[in-house]
Length: 235
Image (tube, rainbow, N blue to C red; front, side, top):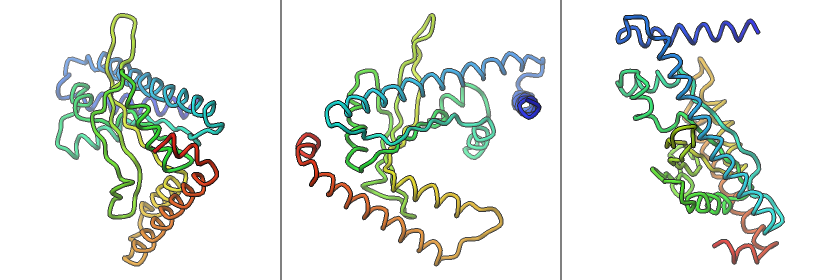
């Protein structure tokens, strides 16, 4: 409990300092409430999208007797991360600039069993009439230079409040178990403090990403061999 109290105090101090220049009359407490309200809206948007994926997973289970989703994780960007990202873009901190300029405040990561499932689930979600696609980056078809693979979507989803309908943006990452394992381990290794990666280590990580890609390809082929009817239904 003491740790939570300390965290809340640090959070309030940081938020107060961010509004200090534009809120000299001391009304930053009101902005603090507004910030928490906005974060609650982002949480609601994450819940909406997570529910949609859970429904798709359940339907998939009924039709194909298996679940394409291994796990779903949600993440709300911290105030520190938000301010760092805005500062990096040379954008002053405000609730308005936060909502206008950042697409990844609310994030969902969907871990799928097979690579084919990534695209099937993405297409099913985007076909829903209350989901609007704002941005799509396919790092599976076009991996990053370090070997990173994942399908990234920025979507707008409505949340229904007491007196209004509000559209919120959510970043979605869809990846396989193999993709997620590589990305998680790569992050742990590459961003270890006080250690500089050598070129050989970078090459080794890239080689591991290629092994991960090969594993996904072979597992998809095996799945299609075991269940050819599924392949016909999911091109």
